[in-house]
Length: 120
Image (cartoon, rainbow, N blue to C red):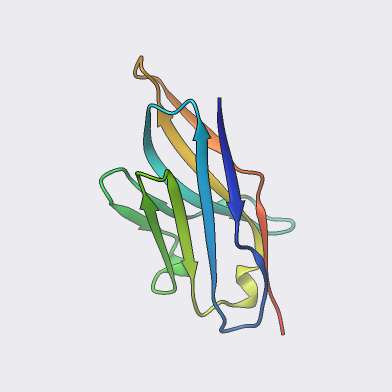
């Protein structure tokens, strides 16, 4: 079993910054992709940013140039640096990791979510 614990959410004014962190623990063989999704009230959950084990990244168009995803493979952490935050970034942010087990099977895990509110 794998657990993901997120931290770093909160209330910030427009134009401000926040840094989200997520640490994976448990029975881990290999983490393929790590990333962040978000879900605003009344909307579908959407991909925000993704980083592969090789360091390739993918961002939603709405956050390109403002958000940066990074990972520390040794610590099994993934981070999301969010700058120039806008009210439309308000959502619950979820950490997601894709793991490969010893048999080559892939599994996806989710964190519990952390609230980010951008408001003056």
